[in-house]
Image (cartoon, rainbow, N blue to C red; front, side, top):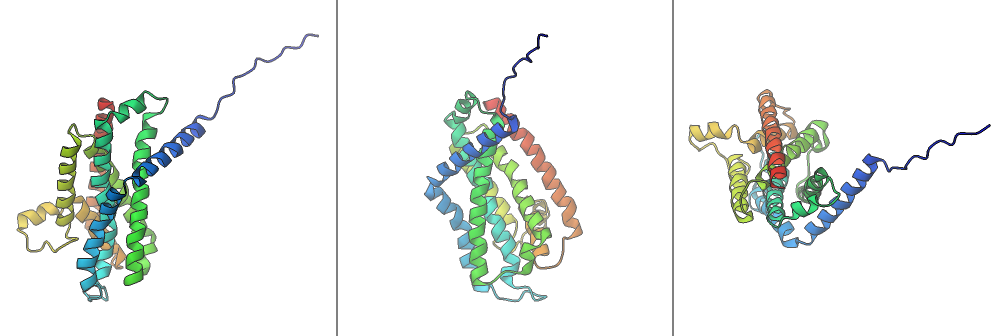
Amino acid sequence: MQQTVPPTTERKLPRAGSSWNMLTTWTTQEILLLLREPVAIFFSLVFPIVIFIFIGVPFANEDIGDGVRFIDAMFPSLAGTVGANLLLMGLPIYVAELRSKDVDKRYRAMPLPGWVFGAALVISTLALVIAATALIVALVAVTFGLRSEVISPSFLILFFGFIAMLCPWGLFLGTLPFSPRAIQAITAGVFFVMFFGSGAAAPIDGLPEVIKTALEFNPLKIWFDAMVSVYVGHGLPSESVWKILVTLAVSALLLVIGLKNWNKAS
């Protein structure tokens, strides 16, 4: 009796595994490229450290009510400033420089999915955010100590949600159809308006009512106020919930626009 030999099937590597390998490889490469720019990393860390030394340290142990120290009310915004600085300025400028050199187009000619390259850029920046934030956290912990709420699920969810909210902003700003020098000026303006408008560096109570009303929709102020309230044990204010949802909706829209700009340019 003649036996039928089943046809040989071509062995294929799992698609998810190959994508994961590509992502880890390109992310590692992007991290190494970032480490070759120590000056950029240094200045990314200088700003929050300067705020801590000249504003936080002199008034750190002052009681501002309910047993809350000044440094307790400052710590969440100080940690958040690290992420805002890198994601609103560092990431857009880096993306703009790559696009100006047609690096994204050269990668597009390779057998590399576009999302892998984009994800590697964001993840490498997030790795720098985590390292820089850990440095600030350690600095505050050693000098003045941290509250137990720093490891509470509510505070951690808010903090990482804040970082996730900023990523689309960085991608959107980096894909604007301008030169890297113009992107640098735009991102600096966006960051400093948001930062000083959040009240993290100085009180904004003395500003005109019209400006204060407009600043109530400042994404940094919305998230900083929520994180401070949770960190000092007051819980999440009800009015912060819908404002946070609005910022997430805006970020989702900016993500769509940023991806469209990226694909259009490439």
